[in-house]
Image 1 (cartoon, rainbow, N blue to C red):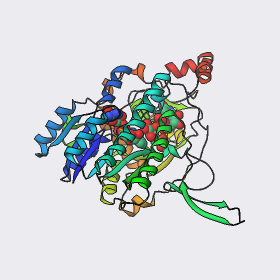
Image 2: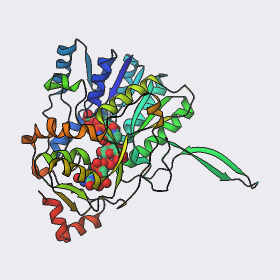
Image 3: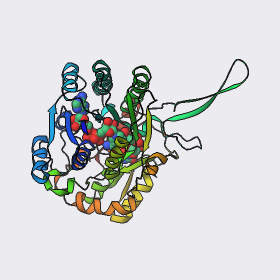
Image 4: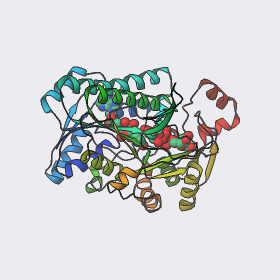
Length: 406
Ligand code: NAD
Ligand code: USQ
């Protein structure tokens, strides 16, 4: 299949491209390399030493004889260039990762809020608009987030995208309907993913576009089978306070003897998936496209749920690290339960990698190996969700700990 991977230079995009190329697909990366620029803006770098995208694809060709093509395109800003590219290459499938994906980055300032909304919503809309304009029937797979549901605690499992509801009619009867599960975003970033959902719903209904939306949990780990094949194929690994996600941060913190940074009580429960399973799910989704004219197909792409403090305690037990309970810079529920349905991927044959199996090898193979590259001053997560939270942290002596715990 000819597949366009938008955002194919990123953390999940790169190993996805390698896997799809390995399986014999013709892979084209469309990326504006904005993520590399954001590293420069924040003064951070991936824990792992990443080569340029051109060098990465050259090494892949050298190792496998397979070409991955790279096209420097801004999906959000270069609508005409994107349209022209799609008209010329006519991909059978498109995997869409090309969005600003860090919640703390999206909450840093008004500029960051604007950038995230403009970038993410325009990227998705430009793509949908161009597909309709060109009459292309490509299967579009989008990487969404579990955060669209708001990690609710209503004592029921979160279904895969749709909720059956009963509506009281004027005749006194109950009409049954399946609606998109009510969105409840917890950051500007998560809000853009809720807006994406509506765009997909409209374009599937109005224009018959074939769309799969993957509501993914927090991805952890670094390597996949293909990134291990050569040191220069290594994947990105973010550990800084904006882009580092909780479990990967704990792993690197453990490796350098930095106390594990738990926000608040650590009672937040979240969904997780290993990078290898994430890549596998995308392959499975590609094999099972929705029919033209059907509603958006939604999968929950996660394999386990964990409470943040339990994760910290697990990593501390395995590595002998300290745990630091810090003031929470985010506005989020202090404690929540989370039960999530993921039957569809399991039925398609996903055999999840569990935290128990994967955790220690990540600490040893990656975190310890590259620990010398860590800038400790970039570890604190200081992006506050509101001005009130920011000033409360500044006034609170505990807040100083948040900014300088290590
Ligand atoms: P990433 O930031 O590493 O990669 C995103 C890529 O998209 C980058 O290479 C960036 O340069 C590119 N990009 C961004 N805006 C673009 C634009 N306008 N035009 C062209 N390219 C653009 O992110 P990731 O961790 O690989 O996440 C990929 C997707 O998966 C995101 O949409 C994210 O919301 C979703 N997701 C990620 C996680 C996670 O834990 N990493 C979890 C759930 C969902
Ligand atoms: N947290 C800590 N300590 C830290 C970092 C985070 O306690 O050092 C807490 C946060 O307060 C939050 C939880 O851990 O309660 C998760 O934070 P995170 O940064 O790991 O994840 P999040 O901001 O939700 O975003 C990540 C990805 C995003 C994706 C989302 C999936 O960056 O792209 O959409 O996970 S989900 O969380 O399921 O919505």
